[in-house]
Length: 65
Image 1 (cartoon, one colour):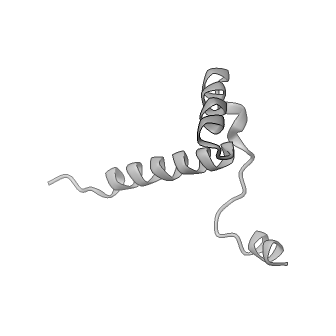
Image 2 (cartoon, rainbow, N blue to C red; image 1 turned 90 degrees about the vertical axis):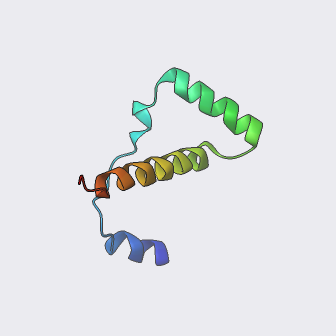
Image 3 (cartoon, rainbow, N blue to C red; image 1 turned 180 degrees about the vertical axis):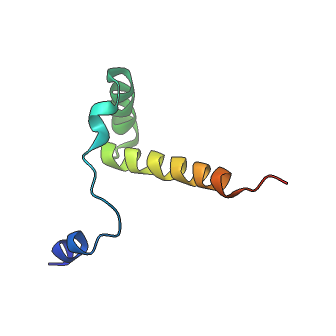
């Protein structure tokens, strides 16, 4: 029920999975990292997205003097 409520109260648009935009070489690298780190690929992708957003959010909020 919690998942259903979160879907209905989402404060952002729902996007299709962007996995089809990951190149074969990058997916192969993710697979090898998954095996090495013993973590799901979805966790690796989520971590990468979080780092990307954090890095780009900082540069977007800086004001030129």
